[in-house]
Length: 231
Image 1: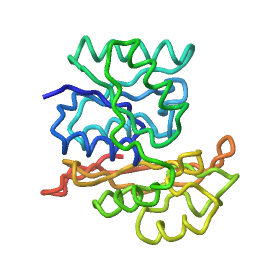
Image 2: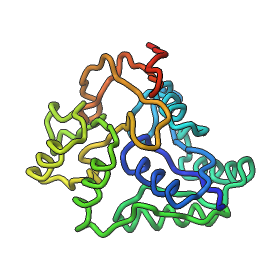
Image 3: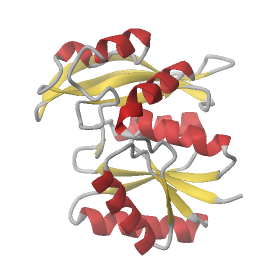
Image 4: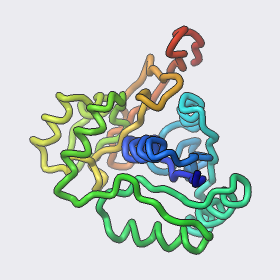
């Protein structure tokens, strides 16, 4: 069984990539997330680090957080070497979809770190609708944590990705998967989660041209006992 780490944002793309890896019986050894320790949030989607840790706990996987301050590429490559040495990872998986430049960079840094790059959700651009529908149909619970003011208004932030979202996003000029930065997501539950996250209080704030979800309180819930609460 091949050991693989996964480049982790906490959003739908990386989560669907994780789902597919597990279905294909890879041994996923860790989640790897680039973060800003200064701002206490992850680099990709702006999620508070304590909440990101709880998401990893809900998935039952180790989370490696790497401060992205300074030289991003150098730090990322060092983190890839680290998971190869510490966890025995042979591959690193990405949630990249159809952006060729993004894929080339990911392939380059993976090979430089001695890892095989994997792209479990890579699709042609014209299949984005099918991928979004698959994610929703699998039963994942995800919310919009960031929405670009260039494309969407603040009412999109905090929305669940469901059939209504699927219909509405098709009425916009956005890539329906948000691949061009139109929106970002955070996954709370799904078929690969051992526990689920529940957001109990949140606000929408403006941050650098993005309507952002500011999570004030949340719970981590056992799926069977539905106990254990945190603030």
